[in-house]
Length: 332
Image (cartoon, rainbow, N blue to C red; front, side, top):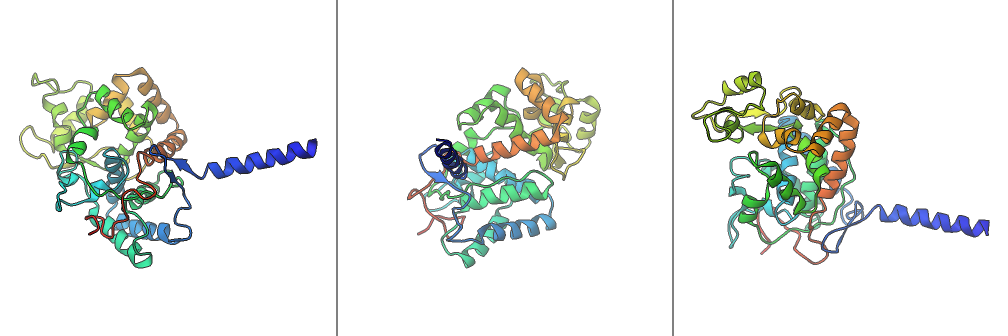
C-alpha cells in the first residue's frame, strides 16, 4: 500500500509540473513556454538580441516596448492588432488617442520580425514577439523576469474604436480605470502591480497638464499633487504650448525598474492622475501601494504574475488568426 501511495504521489507531482507549463486562454486554446521548442528554438534568443541592442542605443526603448504589449492586449486581446498599419480596409490603432504621437518602438518590432523570419519563416507570431520583447525590456531595465507563455497568433483586423475606448487614460477616474481592467479579466491587484511599469518611461506634458492648471475645471491645480513637484513640472509644461514635451514618470530613478514609483505616489509625487488615485480613491489599492513601496521583491513577484495574466487576454490560438510575414500588414 505504501509503494502504491508513493507511486500515486509521484504521478500527481509530475502531472502538476506539466500543467504548470501550460495556460488555457479565455477562448479555450493553450499557450506554452515550449511552443517554439521544435519549430524555432532560437526565437527567444533572437528577440532578446535585438531588444538588447535597441535598449543599449536608447534606454527609453525598454518602456516603449513594454507599453506596446500593454496597449495591444487591452484591445481585442494580445493579437498584435496594434502593429497593423492603415490599409486594405483596416483603420490602424496607431492613430487612436492613446497611441497617436505616443506609441513607439514599431521599428524595433520590425527588426525582430525580420531576424526571426530569416531563421524560421512564418513560424513566430508578432503577438508573441511583443510578449517576449516586453519581458526582455523589463529585465534589461533591472526588473523581474518571467516565463513567457507562447503560441499566440496574429489578428487580421484592428479596432480603432477599441483602442480609443479600452485603454486606460491618464485622466480617467479610478472606477473607469478599474473597469478597463476588469472587462479584460484583470483585477485590482493586477491594476496596481501593472501600473508599476510607470517606474520607467516618459509621459508627455499633455498627459498631466490638467493637474497643473485646471484639475476640476475651475482653473485650480490638483492639490493632491505635491506643489513643489508641480512647480518643477510647470517649468517645462506651460499653460499654453509644450504639449509634446517629455518628462520621466519616475524622477527618482527614471531608467531603473524598481518600486520608487510607489514611493512617489505615497509622497504625492505621482505625475499622472491615474497613478495618484491609487492612493486617494480606494483603500485596497492604497494598501497595495504601501506594500509594494515597502518591499521591492514583493512588487517584482506580483508584477511578473500580472504580466503573465495580461499576456493571456483572449489570444488567438490554433487555426484562428494567422502568422504575419510583416507585422504591419495582414498576409495577402
